[in-house]
Length: 164
Image 1 (cartoon, rainbow, N blue to C red):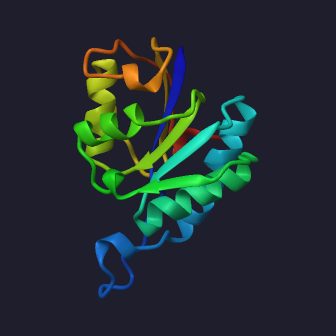
Image 2: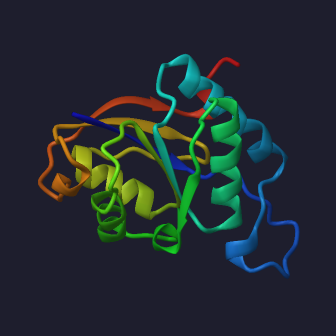
């Protein structure tokens, strides 16, 4: 069994209109929510064994703040394949993980995050910024993950529902 933690990046800033979408940083709320969600993962015993993030600034910053708050000791792997990724990209990135670790935290973007979640658990969930889904996967190795994997959503955490 593997545990996948899917996280949408925290709230980003639109204050600098000249910035490309890829370069947008976190706003004040994002800077607050990301570490709080990291604390939640630590409290729930779900400190990731591996973190993979989109290359977008807001996703990398989210991953870094979560990692620090939950005492993650590894490096954060970044891949452009998760920047506005579709379901096939999520599957590809996860199936290429070479460590047998679990849980794995993936920090990405909508709408692909919601679509990938729906594909895995056969249910729709709205992913607001900084939300995290804890998904149980009946696989032993990441390369076994495919569109037919019968995953189960164990928890779904939204910052607005948390008491910090």
